[in-house]
Length: 108
Image 1 (tube, rainbow, N blue to C red):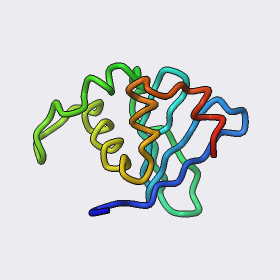
Image 2 (cartoon, rainbow, N blue to C red):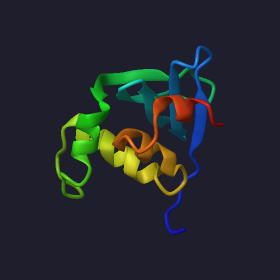
Image 3 (cartoon, rainbow, N blue to C red):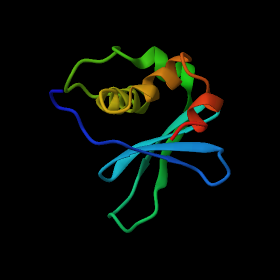
Image 4 (cartoon, helix red, strand yellow):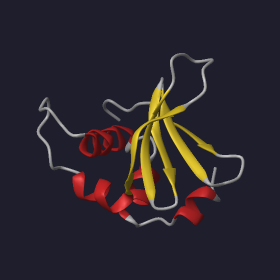
């Protein structure tokens, strides 16, 4: 498990979103979209950062950039999803459509 990071999954109170987080960054998934989230410190609220992207555009961004290159936000978000994949493989399955939002929001 080389370079595995601890990822926390938090389901929103209305079950309308799932946050996948590590340290002070993460990805918020709603039905059909994904968006970067961040917080200033451990005691801060998670805030959405940048635009929400369709899951299909994030899926198309996997592997479309070189390490260390200047990247638009969608590929950066796809890279963040890739970093979390070992700890939470369901996130990538959710983005690729292998797992439905309803199934993902129904499991802890």
